[in-house]
Length: 227
Length: 202
Image (tube, rainbow over all chains, first blue to last red; front, side, top):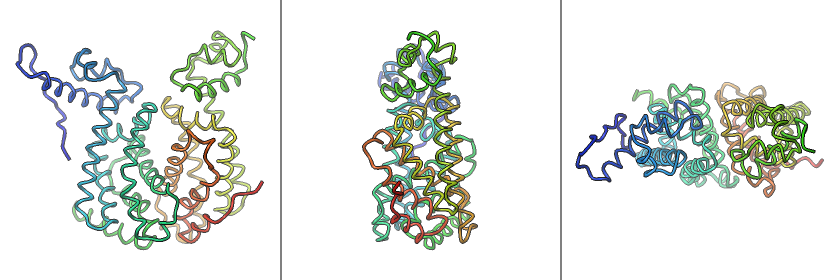
């Protein structure tokens, strides 16, 4: 996953000879960092454009050249976090061969990212749900990206194949909800406890309890060995 | 009538108008007009639009919870009690779709206080689901956050279908919700049995 620098340098003031697109990219970067920082701390509704532009050290004209308003700026930040998270999850999945381990790797990656980058996690899972209907629709789209991978589990079980089409949405909803609640309460200290529960929720309808337990135990042992 | 609508009229008006136009867009004047009162009277009843919304949400939550709790208590055994609560839950939603949307969708992004009210309600449902721990063959094998995961799954399905609750058959979704809730506590066989139990006839 591409790591974004937390300190984005300002472009030089005055005549600097930088191309307009370079300047705009710098401004966009600083606005992204400021939006993530402020919205994660203050909440979407309590964050103003004024606060964002001041924290980013960007003028109003530059802000409105890049975004239509606060919602547009927030949605851009959400889209970027969602895209980068999707890339990281895809990479984690690609490193495993078997479906249960792919699912577990994706969940481990998601939780590790949430623990390492709690402000971004708060934007992507909490504030996005408080930022109005357009943001909520983007959030649902982002969660839905994981549905096809989870649905592959139906090939492993005739019983699971017979369950309703909304099973995967529901299972993902349950997992995201647990992370959401920990983020809201500021209790997402480490990934392990939630990971065990999340893998169990995701795999057990497809693998059954016994096989799921075996997979969960093996993965948790491996993670603990790596740590 | 130009003045002095009842408190309940203002709360009904904000729920109906929020459903029609979205909460954010509403003004005190139009809420007052819909309720048959005036802006001045509204302001002598509630400090703000948000105070009215919170009062409405508190009342909706309390009434809904009372209905669900009564159904849960009507059966002695879990999961029968949980199933009765689930059917009472969807029956109430079908009867009051606007109130459901107000609570689950419009108020989702209103304030931290409304989130706290919603969380309190969800905490009650979590307790109803986690009552399954008492009848589980092996309660130690049920992970601590099981009920929270189940309620998240159900909330996801409800939030997604909230906008078209009048068109879809929520009653038909209950067996699947019960499958998800029963499985971690009583196992696959008991959970699958839930998929075959028909809804109550009354």
